[in-house]
Image (cartoon, rainbow, N blue to C red; front, side, top):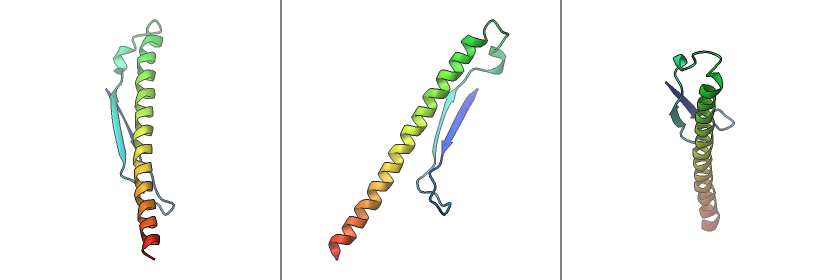
Length: 83
């Protein structure tokens, strides 16, 4: 079974500010939860996978955000130098 996280950074007007970031990871199948005896063990696997993918998604989205911001700022600085 897989979990997929998509991160979209949008401008105030609703347009996309960066390309969407999509990451996925394997999570335990439903049938791995066989009862109260193994719930904590299987949920721990699930939780670790989710936290790892969340952190990865946030890191990739932040990189994309900073890259887009630096490109925009360098264009603005270049225009100011031309004046």
